[in-house]
Image (cartoon, rainbow, N blue to C red):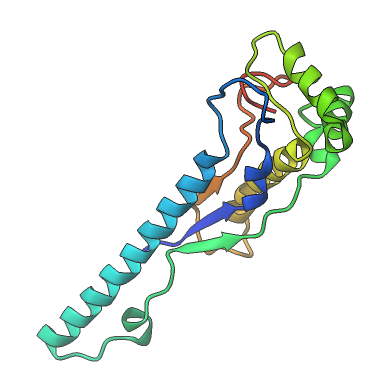
Length: 180
């Protein structure tokens, strides 16, 4: 039997996009859309291969194949994605930074462009969905960690978090390197 893997994906994270007038960027929504599509294709192939294997075993050994083997299910165990709580985010980021990013939800396009142009490295962009996408990404990673460490769930010790925008370059007080 294939070891199950928790998977976390939420299309709302793809709504963090550069504004039309923003220069070319490396970190794009298509990254998670493409990755999610490829993972779905992989899962479909795994299910099909397990069906074929179960059929071959049944034919060659004249044995009754367990119901689960003849009707395999996804190797992925989907996890629900929720925005991380302010408290969890503020364990890493400052209050000022948290609230400045939260303001992007209601900012005008002019304000969002100004924020992007204020970035010294020129690698940040914002829109009205940035805060939600960033908190979903953070909450998604937390959900994956909780799932693999949960003594109650105990379904898998593996997880894939298909999230964006990334956070690994962000600083305590500011966004940096495409990351929040």
